[in-house]
Length: 289
Image 1 (cartoon, rainbow, N blue to C red):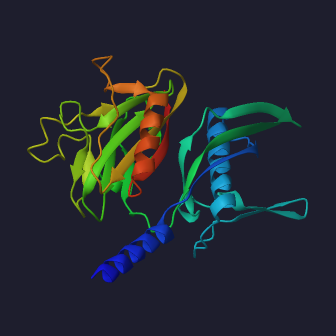
Image 2 (image 1 turned 180 degrees about the vertical axis):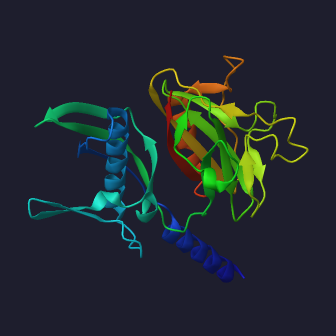
Image 3 (image 1 turned 45 degrees about the vertical axis):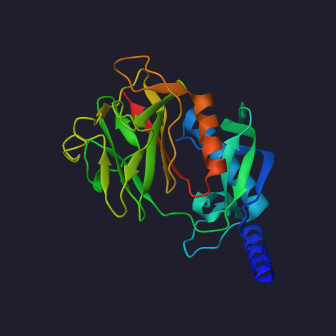
């Protein structure tokens, strides 16, 4: 009996070692030659995301898929292959936490805008399939055909969500001033996260589409813009394991509860480090006057 128990423990230990996920600290730099139709703020974001993808790919490699995501450019008879066009789902890892703040250097070379970025952070190897959730940002409509990442001031914001498994959900919006607003769970809900059922499509921030028991709690949102153009980010965070939102506060009656961007990132990094089932979907939206 003792031998059998010892053997079982050895097998369990071996399995854990085989399927444990590596976490590493990485840093690097990337240079982005910006096309004329891309503004500076968007260029900075593209450069940073490409650098993150490159660092993950360099450390853990990529997964070959059937879709062709490699971009080949031809200039003056010479071909240039851009491997950084691979989607985040194709690299064998994920970005967990940015250490410090990214450093940007903006310059012009032969009238071309050049963005150089350097970043340091922690990445984690993906050794098993992540949960394939569907999350869409919607503008002025609750059907998936209203998906958009371009808003005008006064447009209504909705998010559709569906998961193959039951779990828990939170949604945050990061505005142009680097404030993190908690959109879900709704402000009058006492729970720290929003439970979702498997295979059920949810339309968030719509009283009309909410179930009767949720209607009294639902917050609806209209996008606004203080400048000619602003960029916001919508973070949809889901896990099969129960978790709670970050500590936040109410500062303005017309706005959701909020916390600083740095505090939000610290909360998110801790949650993702502890929970390998956590899925993050991040969508950048542009708001125009």
